[in-house]
Image (cartoon, rainbow, N blue to C red):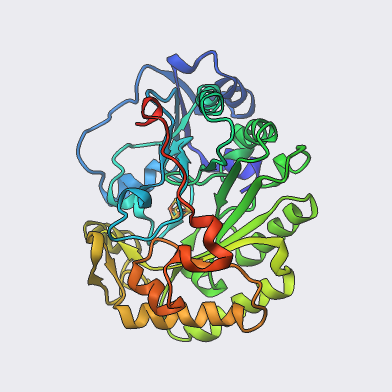
Length: 378
Ligand code: SF4
């Protein structure tokens, strides 16, 4: 969605009084019509219980802006489940919560209970925390991602936070910042000077899966076009082929996806490819079925309880899908760097005959970083 589509999308903007002096609140009052803006002290009518399917859908059309209380900087959730998951080791910076897009499998459905999207107004505090980390450990090659519980870029035409972050990371060329998105919102930062250390990444899928399961997101071709713009401005890019979703004709459709990526980019232009398979918390199945019916390839899938409490396809199908994708890239050009994210060691051993830090071209990605200083942890 571009800026005008976002202005249309949101029905109501709640600006908390505590964010009155922020740049973000100021900007939103300038770009939204005044009848959509309300100044509030806390969110009106917030119940503590879970949202109904209808309320969850409605929460995507209301934006609540307030300062984040506490520390912004925390570790990727995969890194806290080391016994069951093999995860790239990086740090998460949440700039808000919820999403204006609407994927059938979205894991936010399993736990969010706020009646509006949240966007934090105090990004300067997040940058201050990063300054403290830089001062304490100037030589550490930190990797930071912003797309855990909110899409990194889908609201960026409203916030312009990417510009501040890119500018900040320019001072720390050894660090890496990753934006992760299913939008095509890149125009607002393409003119920023950068140090080549900001990776713009897309969750991508077969075009048929995007059309059927990822409602309100940028299309497959729009994502490729946005990635091309970033490459042309010297930004490293990445693709997360996640979640692989089993459906009739999946091999043909995923082959189309791979061929289009290989036609559009060279391996050296793509920082990394990751691949993951459908997984979700059992408690979100009811919400997914209520919101998307049984026609979805997600809600109708046969899933099994697995390590970590999530439901996944059975190991044989997962492996077949991983092998198909990994071979689909490696057989064309072995220089494609591809790894499995949020997967069990068994899948790694089966696909590579190795764990991630034993695969030479991926070793650097999985090299554990020292922990965030305790005073900065949530
Ligand atoms: S883009 Fe990500 S956060 Fe947004 S609905 Fe889809 S899965 Fe959820």
